[in-house]
View 1 (cartoon, rainbow, N blue to C red):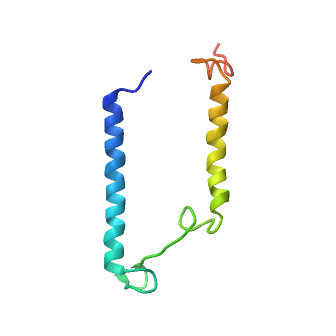
View 2 (tube, rainbow, N blue to C red; view 1 turned 135 degrees about the vertical axis):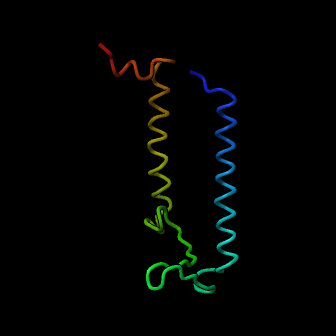
Length: 102
């Protein structure tokens, strides 16, 4: 089944809106609080919840910081494997050659 042009337009519009919202919120927070260690803090709930800026080089809230090449490689491997698998199968029969339905 081929995706419709309307579906692609909706998808691209959602991607663009999400990107704009993400970048605008980051710009607003950094404009208000400044760079980490130099700017202020916003206390929402005393001694429990504080907003402050932070920069990290890792994925998922700083885990894997400094391991950028390893993270890039681990993301590329499944994509490459699925691409190779799809190229080795006859067109339109990718799943059918591995799984047979009764």
